[in-house]
Every structure is written in C-alpha cells, then in structure tokens.
Amino acid sequence: MTNDPNWRLPEVPAFTLESDDFSDGETLPQSARADSGNRSPELHWSGAPEGTKSFVLTLFDPDAPTGSGFWHWAIYNIPAETRSFPGGIGTDLPAGATMISNELGAAEFMGAAPPAGDGTHRYFFTVSALDVDSLDVPNGATPAILGFTLRQHIIGRAQLVGTMETAADAA
Image (cartoon, rainbow, N blue to C red; front, side, top):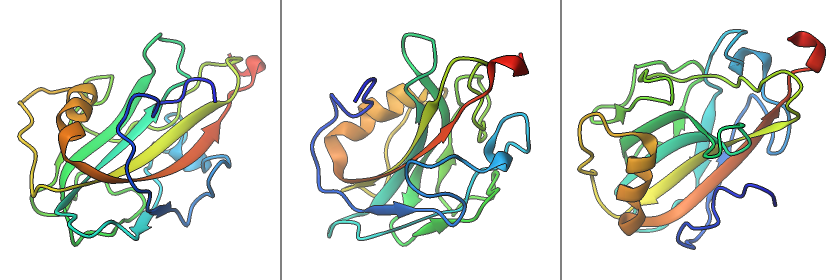
C-alpha cells in the first residue's frame, strides 16, 4: 500500500481496535473533522498480548502532502487496564496518561483536515501495547520521538483506519 506508515516498525502480534463511530477503512464521522466538531471518535480495544503493562495511542495521516505525513494525536502511559476511550475524550485521561503535542503544537486531538482536492486521506488510529508501565519521554517531545521511544518496548499493535476527503470545490 502506498505510504504505509508501518513499513519500518517492528513486526509484532496484532490485537483488535474498533470504534462505535466508524468501521475500518470507512469514512470518519463528520464530528471527527477539524472543521466540523474536532471530536475524537469512541475507541475500544481487546486481545492485547500477555505482558502488556501500558498502551500508547496515536493518530497519523501518512497521506498529508508534507513529505513526512501528519500527526494528529498522541497519548502515552495509558494504564494497562484501560480498554477504551469515549468519543470526545479531550484531556480527561486515565491517571498517568499523557497527551503530547500534535503537528500544530497543541496537546489535543486534531480532527481530519485533508486539503481540498487532495484525494482520500487515511487516518491510522494505532494502539501499541508495551512491556513497560511507563515511557520516559522528554518534555516537548513530538509524536515521532514518542514512536522512536516505544520501539524497544512494543509487544503488540492494533490499528483502525478511517478515511476522509475534501472535495476540490470546497476550497
């Protein structure tokens, strides 16, 4: 697949990530657009590997016309007993979990915002299961640094892909 965001990541067992708001490969709900609510969808996961001690959640658009994709959301140190996030979670995170800044420098969910006429973008919601209770991520770290830091601790991955397109005449 073009722009595969997993191509250099460690191969690990898969587990399940689902949403009551959209299905894998389908269009994200309108409320998950940056210009129409900017609300994170409901997410729930199951089947994490034995030995999971924490989770990381990220949202990445590999199709953004930047040369490096676009990070929309990142949360780390999610406790192992957590198995879901309600829609519109905002900053009301489980104890110990930390949200880091997205590409716009804000520690918040940034909804889908494909440029008008740029075609269909894929939004990869990824939950990574880790073998440590917490990651030591430096203050001000980007989602890319978070990804680099979790590499040595990842023991499982669950993904759910939503899509979004903005018509050329919407410009």
